[in-house]
Image (cartoon, rainbow, N blue to C red; front, side, top):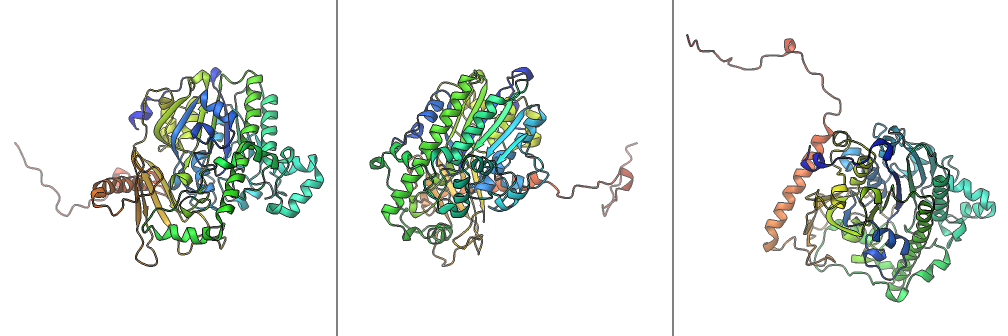
Length: 518
């Protein structure tokens, strides 16, 4: 057990356990809110949440693709631990979501929106046996899985506007600018508010409001949301770094599941960015309504509110689209805000240490009263972030690691063939990305190394720089140590059948002869 975990002790007794509200978006990059410097989009509700709580400056996803990242968040484990490597993988039945552990501790639990700890085809027809939700209103995306018995948005929309429901089912992603009163983000907020109002008063609650936005296709936002984005201030994409880069990144640029970046005009990319931020403006307004309900019900003081996303979106930066087999900050660094006045998560604290999405599971469970020994047994790679928020400890992690195991898809709609495998590790200053599969032409760089302090936009690859050799070696060793530890944590897949003392065999070729000292 680590020293950091031994120092972590839950502050709340059973009677004072906090309510927990997890507000989650999909594909939202870290620098997309006012509190992170985005002055081109109006996000007053989330900026207020940041001002009243903790802002994590360097939170990294465990994987840049939805399903593995969300499995990490909900189980508290990195990829090898939970076994979900790709977009369509299925979370093993014996894995336990932290919502189930909260349910076992007496929490009333609810999901409104996207879970996606398994592939969407699986989740349309069955629930995970250990999801732990008392109220389960699933929806992965507005027009997807509309006939699923679990799709709460589809049921709600059919009752609210049957004609629009039929149109959405017929047109799918070709239906643009969904009216706010019929939008999935609005539905998720409405259902979250209803849950808070009608919750059981004799139980603490955990509620996950999980929306699809600002995920592509970037054009489903209510048209009036454009008024909350200053198009003249939208930043232009960061250009690709000069020199060779890993072949996998070139493949992504040419065969992204959205198509080749080069096929889009600069105007098309800026229009994509406008839609992305218009969706964020809607998210902020709907979250504002939910936070107002907490205040109106007198629940704000003892509710741990967490806002996060699963991964980011390149939006044309580095000549790349959406997300994939690369580890630039727009793709793998995510926003993370927390507020819990009764737990001393207050005061616009800027937390600079490295944290990861799977740490949220340990943080939530520790707040709910789980012991350090329980956390060590359930999720040994996750940390309760409370000591960082309360200023007792600057760093819990020496490194953040993001692993890509042919996780995404290409423009074929299938996994990459030949496959792409890569691992990113970063310390306080440097980020190293190692591509474990070779390129096609023999002239590409096998990896990337960036000085994140001097080169925050990742424009100067130091991989072949002789003066950076020692840094590269040190981070490579740390990465190998991490990979080895993940294998050891998995243990024997079949268990062990140990012989009794009487069944043990003597294998020594020359048995020791004991000397007679008498």
